[in-house]
Length: 225
Image (cartoon, rainbow, N blue to C red):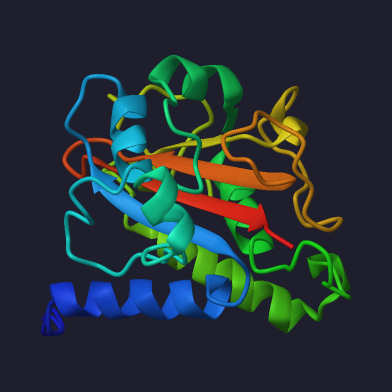
């Protein structure tokens, strides 16, 4: 006799898990974190819509957006701190593919402060390191497709097309120019890739979810000091 099924998870459970992980991991440093719907054949156009704050989260879940009511945005436009006039071609040119496990570690690394972090994540206890990784997995899990279990640790394969049944991951980090599995936890945060803002340092992670999820996630860390 099979055991009775437990109660099904509600949408509120997902929203609470997302918000809790986002606040624990990303609320202290200057990080932008938001999701948007897939509405265009080219997912880069959907990412640009998120950067321009068009439409909002398709599930109504919380975004982290320090500049929502800032004077700079009022003066320069809704895309601030991202450069106005960004194109899909510029996004594609400045991004490198990641595998799922590397995407988890990159997002976990966003919990560090650019300048004043005294213990890079390699210097933390195994328990503390697993806690930030767990929150990163929670945030990325919303973008898993039906093929996630066949992918790697975060549910995706590097460079796979969005039509596949796994999420795909992309970063601005130059560490990913020659490998889809760079070590993002060894040192402090480092930018140096394509510039999508006017800040001295920036580091971005983009997630493209397959059907039937059909969402994009945008996570960006800024050194605004």
